[in-house]
Image 1 (cartoon, one colour):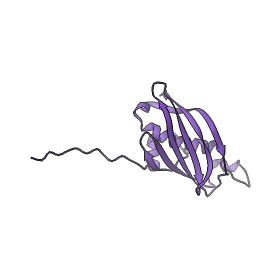
Image 2 (tube, rainbow, N blue to C red):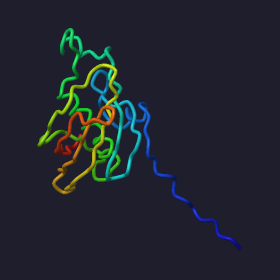
Image 3 (cartoon, rainbow, N blue to C red):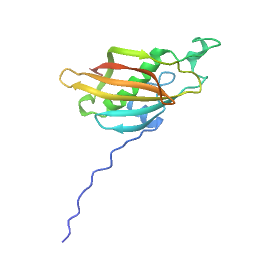
Image 4 (spheres, one colour):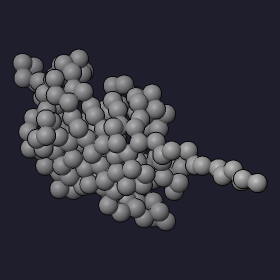
Length: 157
C-alpha cells in the first residue's frame, strides 16, 4: 500500500500591492512599495516603487525641479524590510518601528518616471530584545540611489 505524503505549500516569493496591504499598516499616501519581486523568508526582500509626478510630495519638493525626498526613500527601503519582518514568527502581534538609521547615503536624485528597486537584508534579529538591524539599498536603472543600515524595534500592538 502506498502512503500519501503531505507536501508543504510552496514558499511565496512575490507579493502584489493587495498582499502588501495585508502585511503592512501603511496606506496612501504613505505606502511606498508597489510590489515585492523577490522574497527569501527571514533573510531578504526586493521590491519596487514606481515614482510618478502624481506623488503629493512633488507639489512642494521642489516646484519646477521635482526630487523625491530622501527620508521617503529611506522609508520605502524600510517598508521592504517590514515585509520580511511581518512574516517572522517572533514579529506576530508586533508593530515594527524605526529605532535608528546609520550610514545612510544618497548617491543620485530620484525623480518622476524613475522606478526604485528597493532591497533589504536582515543583518541581525534579537527576538528577546525585540530589536534588529537590516542593510538596505535603493537603485534606479542599476545606479545606486541610496543605501544604509536601518534599525528596528518590535512593539506590542
